[in-house]
Each structure stands twice: as C-alpha cells, then as structure tokens.
Length: 470
Image (cartoon, rainbow, N blue to C red):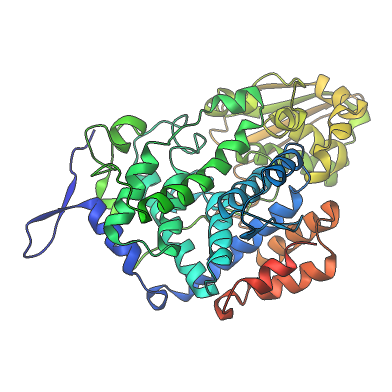
C-alpha cells in the first residue's frame, strides 16, 4: 500500500492531499471547465433523467415513495416522474433508486486507455438536481458541482487498489465521494467544513457485492444511500460537526480500511482543475455491462442470420475466464426479486435478445421474466469458456434443429469506446423509456431535452423540475 499522503506546495513545505482537494472543490469556477466537459455533463444529466422515468414504477420504488409520503417533511425537491416534493435527502435517495432500477444509466471512467467501472452518475446527478432545486441554484452552479463531484469520484476510483468486490459494485465505498463533493459545493461549505463532511462520510461507508449474487433490491438501495449520505454529512459539517482529519490517508481512513491501499496518489491531484473525469459509457441495454457483448452477439444471430428461438436445439454463451467467475454467470433462477435475477444474468439477457430481437426495459416485467418462451430457451442454454482463438469479448453459438451451427463473436459491445453511443442513440434510449414507462408525457419529454441541453442558461432548476414530473 502506498503511504504517500502529501503533495509538495511551493514555499510551504508539505500539505495534505485532502486539503488540496477541498480547496479546489470549493473555489473552482465554471469558467475554467472546458466546453466539452460541460456538454458531456449535460448528456449525462439527460441520460439519468431518462433512466429515472424508465425506473419510476419498478417494484420497490412505489413502496418507498409511499413510505416517504407517510413520513412527510419539508417539500424541498421534486420526485422525478411522480411529482410532488419531499425533503431534499429523501428526494435524492428515491430519485437515485429509480435511476438505478434498470441498471441502464451512463457509467465508467476512462484513464490512459484503462477502463474503470463505476456507477457514479446514478447518484451524483439526482443529488445535484435535488440540492440545486432546493437551494435555488442556477444551471451553471449545478453543472459545476456535478462535474467537480464526478471528477473526484473518478480520481478516487482510479487511485484505489481495491478488488472489484470492494470497488465499483460495492457502491457505498466509492460513490459517496462524488455525492459529498456535489453537496458540499452546492451547500457552500468552506474547505475545512468539506474536509469534515468527507470525514463523516467515511464513517457511513457500507455495501456488499453479495447483493448481485442474491439478486436483491439492496443493489439500488446502496446506490440511493450514497446520495442521502452526501447531503446529510455535508449538512452536518455545515452545522459544525467534525469528521476524520484526513479521511483519505489516515491510518484507518478510506484507503486503509475500504480500498486495500492507494496505488497511485498522483491521480488525485494530477491536472486538478484542468482535466475532469466523467463517466463516458452510455449503455444501450438495461442490464449489467458485461452482459452487453453476448446481447450484441445474440442480436446479430436474430437479425442477420434469421435465428428464431423455436429453431434452437442448444445455445452456448461463451465467456472469458474472468466473466466465467462473475455473478452474471451464476446459474439462472427466479427468486424473490425476479428483475434482479434477470438483469444480472448472462443467460436471461442473451436469450431475451435472441428471442425478441431486442433487449430493453419492457423485457423485465415479471410477466416477461416468467413467460414460457424465454424460460424454454434459457433451459436450452449453457455457459462455457470462449474458444482458445478468442481471448477477449464473448461468443454466442447456436446449434439448430436442422443440424446447422452458427457462431457470432464480438470483441466489445455497442457503447464501448470503440463503438460509442451517438447523441441520436442516447436520445432514442431516452424517448423509449418515456414511451414505455409513461412517467411523463411525450411532449414534456421533448421540451425537457431542449431545457437540459441549455442547462447552463437556466437561472434556476424550475424549467427542469416542472417538466420532469406529471
């Protein structure tokens, strides 16, 4: 584990990295952020809003909304899709859970050709929206806070030495860095107060990747608590609460307790204020990212080779050794939360793509998941290692009843850096979710696109919040 906890500051000897970060987060200006970073952030906001609409009525969310309305509280921030207002920390948590419900939102940081999986925007965008609405901030204020929060989360993720199970899908150990930075900025914390907010936040870290193995609602719950935590700890710090002196590098701080060390502390401050990390992989399918390559293979079999489920004798989903150990490869079964079992399954998602020639949010209703055709095809499917000639990607092979065998291999999926989603693709995804969910009217959705892409021109967030709910 790297123990370098300081960076040199000219004329002043040594200072803590956390102090450099909090000073930057509280003083950075919108004018110093590039146009490209601002535009990308707007598209992240739009993508997340679409996912909130798509997930608005997914089971678990309506029950939580009912609980929050029963509890009551100050009407501070809008519930996306549903309308009405809740206390800001409740609205941020619920909106975040709706966004994550279909596992469809933009994700993943890139650094020097290295992919760093992360589920950051699902929390930082709803946190920024809720706080900006509650406190009357402008669109520029919101974008500045969002970009700064996303950037910090990316830096912490890329510098951490954790395994997959502690990191990107642990959620509760990474995402709160982004949401606390967003909240601290929008609440106007001083550098010292923000350091305390991070110090309090580290004490709330939790979450386990076991949620994915078990297919439980807790997958989206821990995404939501990251939003709640960022707001709550920042509010406490603003009122004088204190936290860890050095939440990053203390003997029992983040890196030691939650990250297995810091592999590259320079990432935390390298080009700080000049380069901004933000998630860049816009997902074309509402399921875990590793499932996307088999989905693409199955879609090629359906559309280009004319394969139909009733013609299949056997379907083989072939994976890299890494993915064979992934929870997506666990034997498919329908348990207490069918949606969770289906969305995080290579078998369900690839078989759905072959059966329907599509794979989107309408394929995750309980009726669809339990339907005979998909379960009959899944029963004919199995998972095995890729042929030795392929060391990456995935291959789907079908053996047909007429004796033919067809195989499609893909090195990467649609949405990957080699084949990114276009703006038209992102818009189509957004409108499809609106049409399927009916969370808002289509005309509202069209006007909302225009408003979000002009977010930097808004004096306050009311043009967005008024359109983002019935």
